[in-house]
Image (cartoon, rainbow, N blue to C red; front, side):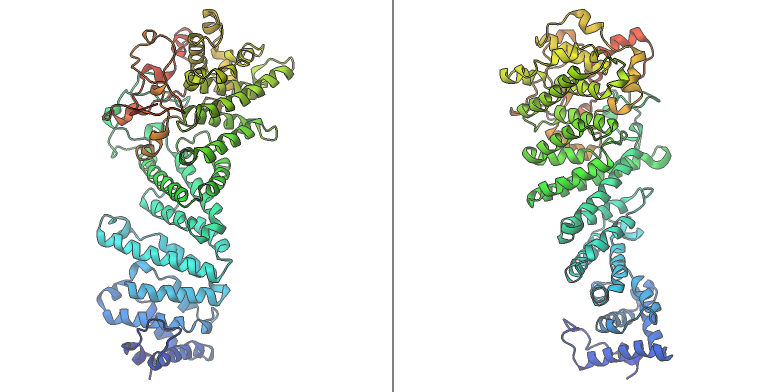
Amino acid sequence: MGAVEVLNDSSSLYTSDLVDNVDLSDMNLVQTLRKALTSVQTGDSDLYNEIVEVMSRDVKDFRADFDAVAQLETVLKALSCSVSCIDIAHHYKLLSALFGMKLWDHNPNVMDALVNLVISLAVTSGKYLDSCLNMLIKNFLPPPWVIKNLSNPRILNKKIEVFSRVHAALLKISILVPLTPSRLVPMLSQNMPKIHRKDLLMVIYVENLLKLENSSIGRVGGSMILNVVMERLRDLDVEIGWDDIPQDDSSRGMFDMELEDEGTIDEGDELPVGPLSQDISGGSIVVSELLDKLMVIAFEHLESCQNDGRLDEVFEILFQSFENFILETHKSKFSQFLMFYACSLDPETCGVKFASKLMDIFLSSRKSPATRRSAVAYLASFLARGKFLPISFVASMLKRLMDECVGYCRTCNGDIRPEAHLIFFSGCQAIMYVLCFRMRSILDVPRLRSELTPLESILTHKLDPLSVCIPSVVAEFLRQAKADGLFIVSDSFIFNNLLEPELSGAIGGCDKLNTFFPFDPCLLKSSNSFISPNFIYWSMVRAPYDEDEEDDFDAEVIVNGDEDSEEGEEDVDYAMNKMSITPKHSFKNQMMERDRLLRMPSRIRPSTSPESL
């Protein structure tokens, strides 16, 4: 029986397990195919070429010709029993046709036959392992017709059929070939859609990466997979400018963001608002939506890790990625919220670890000054914003910061130039920033109040941190400290020791990390729905001073991480929670700026949070 006749007579070739249960007709086909493969070495390529032709047909042929589909399925099944006869030196065209095939182009029966062949080839000979893995990974990248029609139920079903087979194949190969994960992860990184791709392809690919991380493959290569994801989130994050984030019309003029030196938005100005179709160079509005989707996928993955009891393990890997890719990236605005959300899922373990690790970095003399200052900025923002952190823990972190500052004051030399003491000033600023949010809660507990005693000696030291730290933070801190009787201070102490413009560069103007509060409200709407239930907005902070002193300052509640939340109005607009107190560091007029700096930016238009503490 010739090859064509065997291929056309496929009625007896559909057995449940062709490898282990081959009947006579099947064996005849396998023997014929093996003969075709071995005959190539003697110069007889006719049968071999017919097989290659079956595998190389245009996808359109399979849609219209059911016989062609049956022939392809038959050949693939027979090849699965003949992988020992395949040699790259003699069968390059066959291997090229095989590795060029896509599951997306075929029906479930052909997909199963193709996957089984790839598995057999991968586990039989190590020299084909990389090619087999790469062929499977490429199926994580759907063709354009899939991307454009994901709302179609038939396409969604196709997506499930393909991805389930790819994951099952990768898992089976990894079990049979233990070195698979170490070979697989670099390929996953190489096949990641390029950053210029601003469509759902990257979302789909990251979904599959995280599914692999949650499998047995992730037990070996999970750290590298999370690194790949975190790096891509960072890359997208830094592409986004504040003006590129779409806002609802209802958000106009409801909050003020303090941004870059260039094009700084004056307080009271409205953020640019426009339809998504407006012409924005680089398609950055699309980038913000893409990052939002990716962040949601990552949040859901963290939830899955928590449910599986492996969040603590994943958190260690996540922190390494954070330290490598995000900690010193001052343009990062959103990707750091992966850490915040992981901590909110397990405050007692992850929350404590995150704060402690940041503290250790800040206190480490082996780290660079820039790294230490960035770490304390993250620590301050985390302690100020994390609703899930007990106030006792916040106070303990502040005590460690104060102990460090007190020790520095004792040992500092006679050089009082601000640029010589930036680490010290960063620590002072972190303490004041946290107390702007947490002072009332701490002072309500006598034991915790007493731990703030060293602060006055720090702030009145000859280095004069009040004249160097960010003036809006200093002003708010001093106003609350005076009202709560934390220190005995005079009006001149509050108002006359504020930063002069020419000194601001020492800690703020020259280094934006020092004016960077990384956990300011998240402006990605879908992502914020995960963050906001555990986030302290400025509107939640009840200042101890007379409310009559503040214009338009609505009723607020005390922020206390140890107390239950109160319900707020349910219909409050989402955008009203997007208040930032990241201060400006550009000065137009010294006298006018002095008045402006006496108020934290978000106090001008306080947000109304949907939940209270």
